[in-house]
Image (cartoon, rainbow, N blue to C red):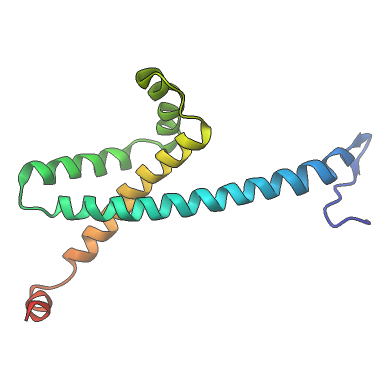
Length: 137
């Protein structure tokens, strides 16, 4: 095998087409897009999730209930369904297309926010009252 990414052939099927075109170019573009999407969704989800966690721990009942509803709702809906909603239904509602990249960023950020909100809330609630009093002193 001359090429590291060579797929060779299987029987009478020639996979030579995939050597340069698919393996190098498409996989590299897909990897870069996945890394960028992960970074954007993680940062956006962390920021939005922190706000949701603070809202969920709020003493105002309506704010806490709204945040809890969002978190529990997003965690109970399959991710693929929400991706389809943002790719197919939301453009019909707002009247303009969001695109595949935009719907992916919005969907993954919304999902990350729900999970990060639970992580932040659990972390804040795990601090004992004595530790809080010591920090305030």
